[in-house]
Amino acid sequence: MRVDAHDLVLRYGDVTALDRMSFSLEPGKIYGLLGRNGSGKTSLLSVLAAFRKHSEGTVRVDGAPVFENRDVTRRVSLIRDTGETVDISSAEDALEFAKWLRPDWDAALAASLMDTFAINPKKEVSGMSKGQRSALGVIVGLAGRAPLTMFDESYLGMDAPARHAFYDALLADYMAHPRTIILSTHLIEEVSSLFEEVLIIDRGRLLVQEEAETLLSRGTSVTGPILQVDAFTEGMTVLGARELGPTKSAMVYGHLDDVRRKRAVESGLDLGPIAMQDLFVHLTGGPR
Amino acid sequence: MRFPSRLLAANMWFAVMLWAGYLVLVTVITLAVELFGELNQSAWEQATQLPRWYAFFTGVTLVRQFLPLYIAHGQTRREFGAQAAVTVALFAPFLSALITISYLLETALYGLLDRPQVISQAHLFTEPTQVPLVFAEYLLEFLVWIIGGSFIGAGFYRWGAGGLLTIPVGILLAVLAETATGGELRLPLLRVIDLNLSPSAAMTAGVGIGAFVLGLALTWPLIRDVPLRNKA
Image 1 (cartoon, rainbow over the protein chains, first blue to last red):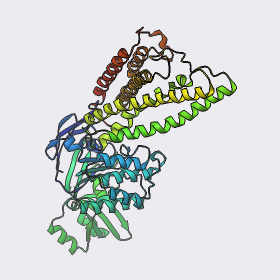
Image 2: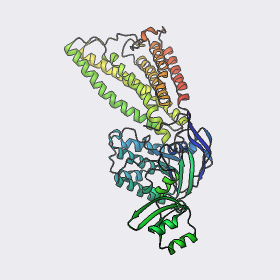
Image 3: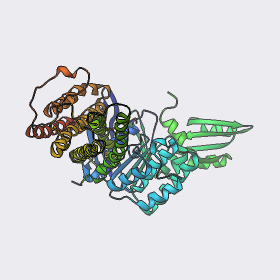
């Protein structure tokens, strides 16, 4: 599903959570939504899923307004850590309600994922561990097959093997049933390989919206002898550097043109990609 | 609109389980009174205090638990409101039927024990075997308590502690229902409120429908654009 937001504003009393945010999302991609705590990620996703009514501006999904529009909302799914979709007696009951309310529900996928995450259908959700509740949430999100599916850090409670099982399941199901997926996360390095496009927001404003590859190309690691690295990076924005004996590795921000790349090679320097997380830290302004 | 079969089934199944347990408990207490004391009045007349609170919390749960569930599954608040209204309208008679059956089972038990099933308080009925009147009275009571629970639950869900403001309105609905059936609401301080109405079947029906519609009308503005909470 296509998403278009224009001058989107959301206020909680005196606090402006979304501040004139505008963007468009093409259908059939996996988007990463990155932002620091309190940047507005949950607020934005809540508006897109009609969990909240926005204060000003417009938000449209496939050209139609979202809030209280059943033709849109029934095709939108947001899974949050708060557990709206799972906090109901047993896991089996949660799946039954999802099956009843979700038009694209895939019961076979849900059953398969229940096995993958070793969740007992008869178990009361209130008696589950944090990781099991999170896993049940992502099962509901994936098996719901909503054309616009969003996960708001809903898998943070899962341990590393379970998270990787989720990433594998998400990618496999996305390949088989392409749809628009938005993943909001703090585990940037762990999930970034899934992103086709990235939105970075800060203080309720959109900082960056780019293809993941384009964003990554904005940063480069420069490795080689200390003097050559220092000479090469002089005047550039250096995000960080590490030294090991006579060798230095510096992360620089900004596009490197062919001339500079050629110069680096001639200086005996190695150029490589840097982590999305390092770019994120730089773009959102470092420690506060 | 889709019929709220899952919502009803979830609540009805839980209610039957609770009722079965409660029926056993009340019967055991009845037999204990027979063995160790003097059994001279209906036990179920006293036992109906708890079910009304169960009905109240069913109303609270409708908003607190099922509203977020519905919205998170892509339903609108309008759809939920309609499904919840139908659920209440069908769940209240279901609960009332369970209470009516309980009175009839008690009648059979008291017959076996050769004890009088005396009704000691003012009701719409004078004998527990007056099935339509027993059913009508508890139907009204459960309708009002469920919708009152929904209203107060919506107030707390929307405003947090500000939901306290909805409690007096909920109490007023309950007082109205009790008065319309000739009953007396045994809650602290409420004896000062006496609407002094003479109960009749017609009045019970009128008050029941009126209180139900009023409760819906009061609850809808609270949920029609309510945001889902960011914290569980």
